[in-house]
Image (tube, rainbow over all chains, first blue to last red; front, side, top):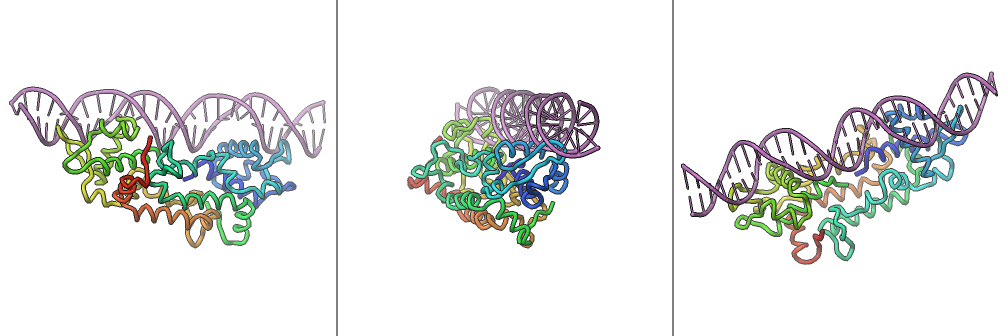
Length: 143
Length: 143
DNA sequence: AATATTTTATGATAAAAATCATATTTAAGA
DNA sequence: TCTTAAATATGATTTTTATCATAAAATATT
């Protein structure tokens, strides 16, 4: 459903949402262990996320990654769009170029409502929303 | 969402559902062009599907691939389970080993109902059901 | 029985995704 | 201003997925 990369990215962003802010930055080393993703790999993903303005960073000593208020209020789908591309969740399930509402493939008719609901929810929910669920104990991020 | 292989497999099986039966078999050559999948690739997939009893075949002259009544009445999800494995659509969206209903990840809570609906519908709908939609003109299989 | 046509079994190659490694740049603090 | 700690840029390697190729086995037809 999602690529490994975007799963890692979501975990990292949620970790930052919960454990960082402008005053308390997190280094790539300190994020890699708790989210259980190889350091060199997550480093690369974090760089992409910074470039796309999903997360923030500063270099040098006392530097690191963090989420500011704007970052936190972004919809979760932004992460997926940057890492996996916009089409991953919305393109035709049979990869038919001409599959449209008016000319749907056989799977389209059946599954389109559920798929739309998924992308809608990912637009609706912000990074902060998910982080709050974790902080309230309604959701978990084990290894 | 689905692998290339399972997309191809679904297209091939639907093609057979519409264009074959015990008396009218279809060769790998005759299926590859209309579904727009490389011949050598679809050949391999068809072999897997035969082995898993999703489709039927006979060798030699006048041989080919076809769907019998049992084949046609199988749920569509059988194709996906054979080609992509059962976990592709059901495993945790963050690949957390311990993500369960009682200990859900943040995406789980939000998206689980929609995901369950998708797998439920794929269980519910048979290959014949989808083929019928195409034959009635309610769905299409363009390139 | 011989031949031709088809699937089947097996594996080679190419492309993409995932993973690892490191030199360069930036900024804080002594 | 020097040193150190951090991100950034870049690219190499490995693994997985997708694609291609072909010899062997089976079966219908002559």
